[in-house]
Image 1 (cartoon, helix red, strand yellow):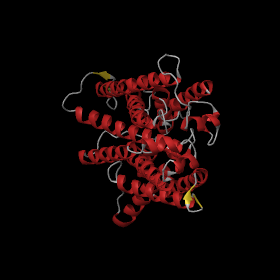
Image 2 (image 1 turned 180 degrees about the vertical axis):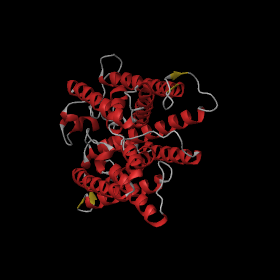
Image 3 (image 1 turned 90 degrees about the horizontal axis):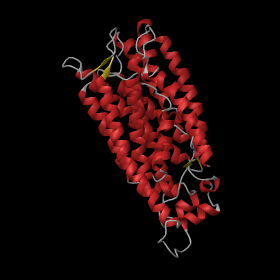
Image 4 (image 1 turned 135 degrees about the vertical axis):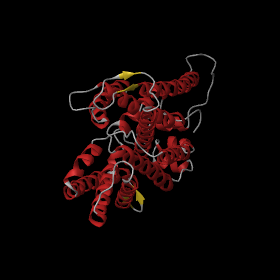
Amino acid sequence: MAHGSPRVHGGGPADRVPGSRRASASINPPPRTCGCHAGHPVWQEGRRLMKHRFMLPVLCLLAILVCLLRMLLDRPPGGTLSFEWPGASWIEFRRTAMLSAAIVGGSLGLAGALLQSMLRNPLASPFILGVSSGAGLGLMVSAWVSYMTIGSAMTLPGDGGVSAMVGALLTLLVVYILGQRKGWPDPVALVLVGVIVSTIAAGGMMFFQHLVPTGLRGAFATWLMGTIPEVMPSWSLWMYGGICLACWICCQGLASQLDATLLGDDEAESSGVRLGKLRLLLLGCAGILTALAVSIAGPIAFIGLVAPHMARLVLGGRHALLLPGAVLCGVILLVGADALRQAIDLGGGRMPVGVLTTICGGLVFLVLLRVEMRRT
């Protein structure tokens, strides 16, 4: 690709249809005759890229400020809202909640960006593959087996993290195998199989929730609504954070190949991209990231759907900027939602963050969708 990567999800239909004139022009643009005046397309592209690169540190600063806000804002159970730096007895709870929300939000944001690019579908999200339902099913099965063998079930989110991740990865494997066409993963087939597998896993989750003890169903119901934990072992936070960082570094090195895939399969393969292996790697990273998030906080909707769109509006469609931007937007959204829910008390205690993200995320996504429609 000459003179920069193609725009994605931000142009007209020709920008997204493989083999279109505008898509071909982005691969082999006409020779530059003059790049000295501000109206030249090359000059405009350079200014746009500089603007996008400037906005990435702004997003990073905003994420730090939101995390600081979460450390200052809190409402103890049965207490009143406070806005101050926590004392020695509370700082560990707030720090765990802030770090957990940051890891979960960043993981979902990155997973959403990967799936939208791989499937070339702006409405794709991590939950389209049924990973969240698979994680919940794995946890329910593990809790039931634990209760039947030793007479007590596991606690959330600590003991159930491993079983939830195993269930998520097994679900991902089933979706990947059944979503192949002629030996290679097909984007449309993956979406259809993901929806079906998600429905089956959700039914199994309700079945095993019925089998566990009545006293444990309340904890599972709260987990299924999406809850940021305030108590977690430090080693698990380090482990989950390290996994998220490793997935981001791996995907960041594939940014140029991701740009090429948005031109179409033929154009990507002609430029040297091995689509089969690339899709397998992206699918694995997206599944691991989503399983990681569900293991910590349960299924949290719309973060993985909205965060990539926010990053794309601010930073453009180049994956070198889009991927870290999606991580930062996911952190901002989920940590901000966790801070906001501290101020909401409708008489039943603090609202689970998953409920808040579902309500607000849907409204925000409608606004983003409207803005995107006007741009196109």
